[in-house]
Image (cartoon, rainbow, N blue to C red; front, side, top):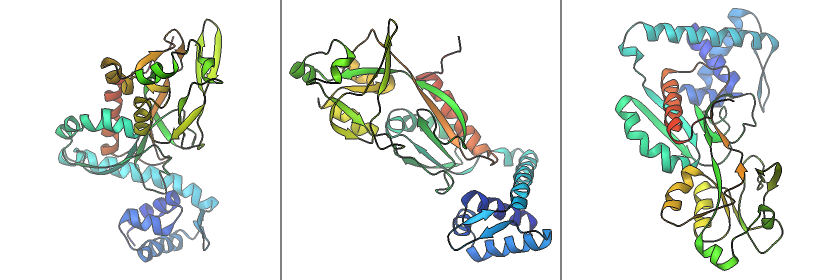
Length: 306
């Protein structure tokens, strides 16, 4: 038995909750992974995993062993990396998932500069606004706006998206310019709804002015679950939008969108890079996260406290 392979297989089964998924990510057969775990249990003389027909659960002994294993695997990888300059070069495949507007407008256009620095990294980029199960789908990291709901994930705050309220000129010509945000709640005005993946519903936006604090959602005829479609709907005059400034800037400049309620303050939307817990961060993932943070520091910097 190769103890390194066995420990790696055990850690991946715990993280994936499945022998089949662990085997896929390790590029091994399910039989090989099963045999490695059995040999490891025989050597340690403890049961590490409880197996049923539906799922795999770690035992109490297995949970303690897992914590030590991931530390050892991380130390081994660091030791190998430190042996030579060549091995320290970030390389390999990264699976990431990012919101569609952020990919189209910021991340993908900047990738040539990333590849100039790290030509040996291959990126598989999922582009969506859906909730991704990082462990089950074997994703290295996700970039997401809004407060994270899964508190088990590790996360780095890489930006704050400043928001504004906008409408297309044809919409305002048809329905007029609202003077107060509450006009959007019960009037002829319409918003474009954005269906957040975690709830499947449109959510209200916090706005404040001179001590008055509101949560405004408005009435919509169309709601979508994709950022690019959301922007397109607003540009088509289908309703009023709440947009990050990076999405609105070019359309404001050419007159396709006009700002509303400019004397109201909207809470910024935090932007995070999240990745699996209890897993060593590889050099390729570390440089990618650092690159995203540096990129967003130019487009949507995090405000300094105080």
